[in-house]
Amino acid sequence: WSCLGFAMLAPMLAGHARWASPIVTGALAKGEYVVPLPYSRWLLRSCGQFSLMTLGAAAHRRWGCCFLAFCCFVAGLNYWRKATYGLRRHADMAAVVLTLLYHSAVAFGLLGAGCAAARTALLVDPQRPLLGVGPWVPALGPAGYLLLTVAFIAMYCRARWFASRNEFHRSTPWHLAVHVTGNLGNLLMYPGLK
Image (cartoon, rainbow, N blue to C red; front, side, top):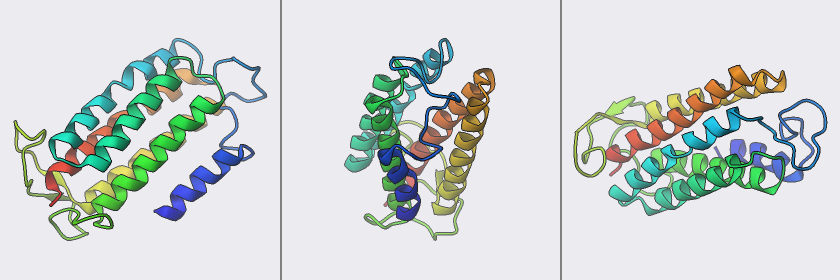
């Protein structure tokens, strides 16, 4: 996972990789939207989901997860309020990559005890209710979290593919699905952690 994160983060910080270039084909003028309105507004509203991930992590006393989820929330709001190419975009992408890597390490027990199940388990019996109180739902095991992570990355790649063709009416629903999948995966992982 760390190799994947480095491979995604290093070109972005260097600013010269093809995938790190602006989504819109061609050079963007300073202040020009990477994702035009109204699509960037839809993604801005979708960032509110990260507050649920933050609350879920806090309810399960996963303070590292909580901090990174809050960073995703703030960075996402900051970027999508005016989705232009620049430092705010890089900060948003870095927050997402770090959160993905950290949550993956937690799910597989690399940071702490991990899930209360074998690494091949898709679902596990929850140790606690979903948000500390409320319903008891099956929690994601390491393999289940891995499957959702693969789906998360595949949907993001699909969104980028449509965006590279300036088909924002198609790329935006895929990116919205990325937000839902990432948040749902993390929320369903927390109850199964030891």
